[in-house]
Image 1 (cartoon, rainbow, N blue to C red):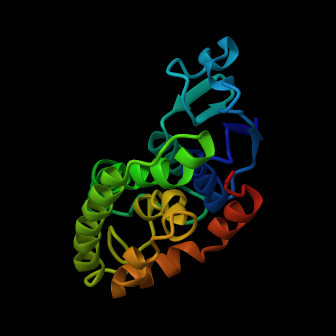
Image 2 (image 1 turned 90 degrees about the vertical axis):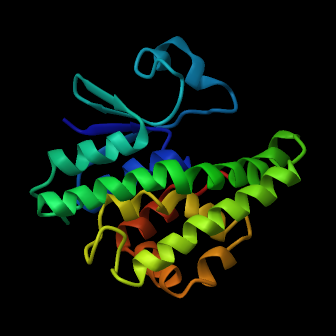
Length: 215
């Protein structure tokens, strides 16, 4: 049975989409119009009770939260495509650690930038310049840590690409694109080299082109 992922145009959903493409897993997509509130309709709430995106449906099995979806795909299809979880318990530990770093340290300030710089104007809300300044400063501090880590390893969890790297792709594309703060990446030698490698992967190029940003 073909897997179905909901709302593929949005950044959080693309974490799951790029994992599916990396692993060579056939899938279908279902568009969810957030502006029209389709995520709050009863039929959607039946599969995602919080009314958020994304959701992955695999037959009778349903799973939400983008990083949980990534882990599910990588584990279920571990025997095909690149091993995105690490080959040893130690490598797996590093993958999980950097996935958590992305979720708790990297993503929050980047999400704040995305909401204020990209989406606030589209929705007719004023951007909060104080939040923008503070978020850029917080993100810069996180990226300084990344720079040190990536000076020792080719990728975040070691010398192999993993879910920890792929999880950064969708929102960092906002950062270097419509947010207009590519210098946060490019001014750091090792972070810049890492970004160039992961963003040029065929799977991401396919996802980025086929499921273009809705802004």
